Length: 121
Image (cartoon, rainbow, N blue to C red; front, top):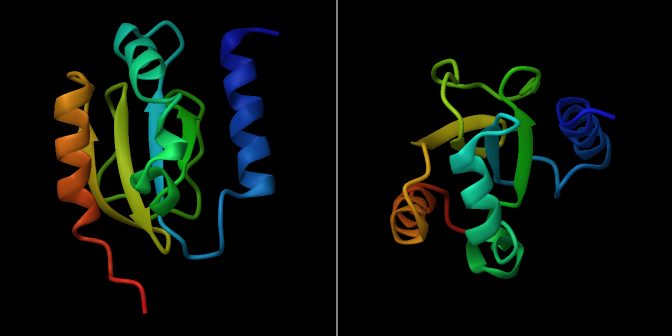
């Protein structure tokens, strides 16, 4: 199975299984096979992300930028660059991070985005 087909299969599986309760926040990552910055994110952030407060608040859902289907999500603009991280809440885009410039930049930008999420009731 090609890497692209593998990513597409994972995206379909993730959509079927879901990553949390309906309407919950999630962090979509649009990536492309062979993307050096996507691979760097995979090494530096992806293994620890689910263990963080941000990961519990907005689980990661991976989408192939060329084949990924973000149906059910109202994006404010098309996604053109990999990686692009889109924080969504109740199917609507809250904000996005274009590219990956390293751990420090990612966590800082993500912290800014998560402040836009509604507080727990």
